[in-house]
Length: 235
Image (cartoon, rainbow, N blue to C red; front, top):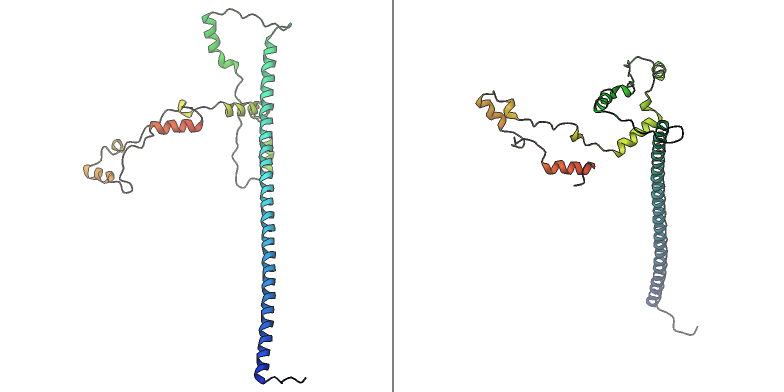
């Protein structure tokens, strides 16, 4: 109480110091709050990434299980078809045997008999069955089409075990189409335009796109690569 009173300048300085101190405290609180917010955001990002990773793993596991199920189903179908084929072959062998289970001795056959059997081979096979496809008109009723379609007889080779047998045989016994169909001849433009006048012949020789009129023919390397890629050759 008995001290010297503060001047106006001292009061202003004290006020400034108080304001500066308050500003520092406020900025410190803001920095702490920003650090907490940043930490919370990082934690949320980590949780989101973990959820996405778990979701991707579950989706991958479900897809893998689906593939395994499809493969198992396909293997079961193939195994059933093979069992039916083996059973059918066993029944055919049993039908040709004797009553006591012994196989009969083969009969002696001459060359004339063998040639006769070869000529009559086509009579042993059953007659082929066909499935006629009727024309469908645009104004025809769908119910009528379904009714007429249901009355048609489906061939035996397109049903049940015989169809599965053919599918298995087609899947396992690969046939190289080059062994059935001959090689296609190369197109030679000189043979096509051999009667053209010299001036016109010069026009088609000047090819506009690539300027290459050589014969487009597969090389031996390309043929071998194709056969190896299709599984027809292992060389």
